[in-house]
Length: 270
Image (tube, rainbow, N blue to C red):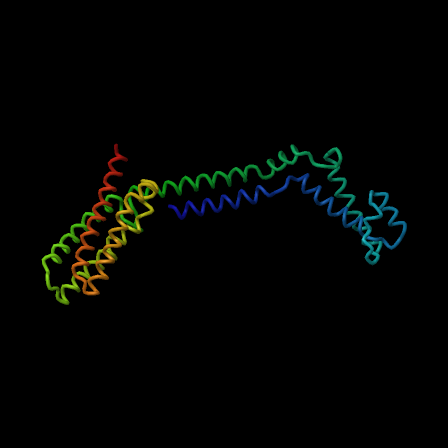
């Protein structure tokens, strides 16, 4: 849904921009006339009669740019185009040969207004569809991350598993290679499994509870993650007691994250 919404917004932006940039017919005619006037008046005819006619048509002699003389036939062709464009523009009866602002706006509206409004409607509709997609993901979850109820369940399962690990470590005074491997594998499984999934779901947490709520949950959660990494490093370095203590600290941090999440959910319902 969100991808479709983005496509609609992009098309709406393109349509609104294209239609908004279109000039009203009188403005286009004036631009065309100005361009032809510049070309016609700057063309240095090779006969004085042709130059006299340019001046008679309103050209300033200072407009001639001093390049090689242009054949009379070419000047005559420009003159025909200029006369036609001038007549077309003057038919509107604008004072001072300028297009009034009101005429510019009404002419643009007649030509492009409907398309511009359609583009704006597509932008707004796409934005609403995008927000609806976000709300749907927040309420029901997506394949990209767990549902919010699952986040709480995951924290509960993680802490339960780590408590079992801590108990086994406390009861082991002389760890074997197998014990060390067990600790490493358990920590790796937690970090790369449910904890990674919770991290992937952080945007959903922000959407539902805001940045303040996110900080309340992920502050202690991040502490738990750091202690798990410390426990892994300690056990690899044969510091069993330090690793055991780090597991206990990780449990405390993750329980704090779960408590903060429960409090946010309760406040939201209330």
